[in-house]
Amino acid sequence: MLLTGFSPIVAPQTRLLILGSMPGVESLQRQQYYAHPRNAFWMIMGELVGAHPELDYDARIGVLKQNCISLWDVLDRCVRPGSLDGDIERKSEMTNQLVEFCRAQPELRALAFNGRKARETFQRHFCKKFPDFWQQFLLIDLPSTSPAYAALRPPAKLEMWRQRLCPLLFDNLH
Image 1: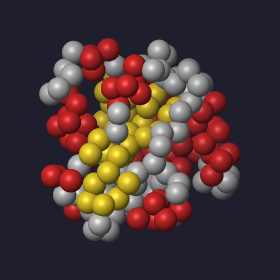
Image 2: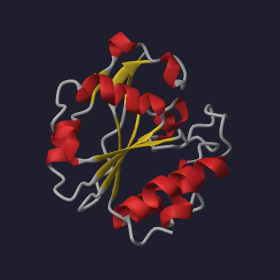
Image 3: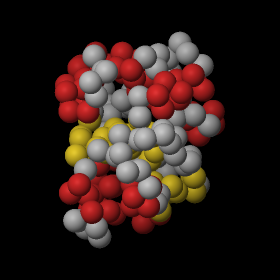
């Protein structure tokens, strides 16, 4: 089945763009980024910027925007049975307009990849075509917040996100 992702969540004066690969089944059903209850994304964002999972979705998005954080996915469309990134059919991948998005964000400093699949897909589709363009941004690899990535427990994921994002980007992150 061909899946279609979401429009970006765009913060005014975006400084950080967090990129996933493609929303999972639960997220697509609920029309919310990182909607699976065991996905660690909102727990991590709660600890870093106050977008706690207990808040309603719109409030969490508001907190991200206040902190100049935008969300999107590398892929706009793909064929994938289930939610696992490894099941995405490579030939079906259709990307979002990331170059155009980034050009429209003059304060953008960094792109952070929520998991290896997001980074690999970005590399394959964007870095080879526009290698010089991406040099102006810090590209940050982060462990996937997906419950399918069980090699790290959520507290370890949080610590890696904290180490890689806080010192590099925001004075107001703890």
